Amino acid sequence: MDNWLPPVIRDNKYFMYPLLWYWYNGKNVTKLMEFKSYYHKLTFEEYEKIYKELEGKAQDRITDLNQECIDFINQGLLDGGVDSKVLEVGSGRGFFLDKLQKQGFTDLTGVDVLKDFDLPGVKFVHADVERLPFENNEFDNTLCNHTLEHIPDIRKAFEELLRVTKNKLFVTVPCQKYYHYTFDLHIHFFPEQSILISALGLKKGYKSHKLNGDWVLEIDCQIAE
Image (cartoon, rainbow, N blue to C red; front, side):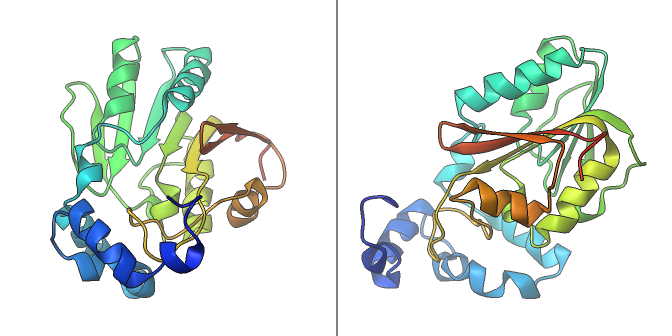
């Protein structure tokens, strides 16, 4: 729809309202439609409350990742060894942590504003990605999938991901055009790779991949800046 409707129609409030009413199951539709207008005024607790109360079709999905991204990130983590210490920021329903555990990874930690999974042997930490409660270089490898596009201070959040990661950091965000009315609570949009790299402040130490509609950054934290 984003690619075939003229923007004047695609981003028309009255055109989008019935579609978003269906998407959000008729609950808090106007409030969620206007999220981009007021998110910057919210405290962390208020931000968290919106996500706790969120009901919509997207909540029925186990993961937002496409298979190409899953395979690419999974192989990158396997290359680091199943004995590596892995952190997932924005762990959601635990899809990737569960996958890693089944492949033999034993030191796994998930971070999110909501606890939406229960995996024996996997640690969960309730935290704000802009203020991760970990030591410098505490984790060998980190993944952060479909999360940064939701975070108010994306640069600060990314700096935190770099800070706690010793080796490889994998970041995935959607390759998406900006529209005010969207079927998600995204506040950052990256239709071009250059916009993403600029937003994160990256200068070196990374490889960028476009995989089936998503940007995946593979970052070497030992040389990235």
